[in-house]
Image (cartoon, rainbow, N blue to C red; front, side, top):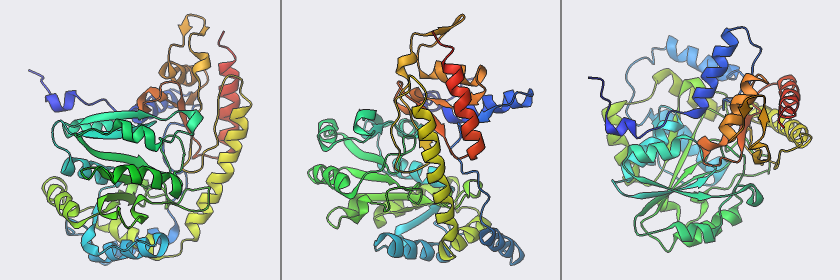
Length: 397
């Protein structure tokens, strides 16, 4: 009998990976598809980081690493947090994992009991609610609309908190919207949370360096609240190292010990060679980070300009990351032939199959009136994809 666990049956598959797979299938059939569905920098990993990995192989950094990561990498992360963020952490407060995704999941699994509530602002990254469900917790979705630049208010947060609330997941800069919380906005949320001692903030800062407002604000920067914050970060986005799979948490020691215990049972330490590469990323020249950030900002300006020229789309101006999340509900109820658009998933499939541009419907991100496009691609692809989207949407009547 083919019976999967109830735990697995509660989960939904990743919509972003599903759209990327459909895009690949069409490409394999010879269709010229432009893929805007994947959140992955299109740059190569910088040369000095690759050289460090080659050196690590030659020097035989090829054995099991300590569960929380090599001391050298943890020290490099401690220095990064001090130099870039003004935050004081000890190596014992750092745990390195197989990507920031595992870091988030470790934290949720370590903190959340069955029936605990975790507040997740929507739009949200697709995996947050699924991870909470995996821990047998209850996702509590708080909607932030395009009118409020996709950021929740202190009043919304206060209204969502109950005696069962265990955590708030906050992603800034945000996937999927690119919204960035200012320090003042974070302080407003912090002041609410100070009244609720049980609530931990899981601060996903993986897009920290892809930032167009000049500075990154962290919830851990408040002295009266730092001991209730788990910072999630890693090398994937800033250093174009998605495939190397190195993320980390910086957190109170009791949480790090819990996550270390968990990680020791199901993956152990992350890839040894990748850790040496990540160490070089943090300790070497940061010029590559700024070069890529400038390219993303230029592309952001380009895609926002072109998207605003498409009738029926409502577009905001993202402040970070590399996503645009336009509101597309004006197309709901419209048709092209026998194809009717009922929601953003229908719209995304229409754009893929008719316009040959892969995007992701907002349903998966908790905002069914929008859809996500990644502009982590060339200027030429952006120009051509937006032309295709404009022409394809014009077919709907």
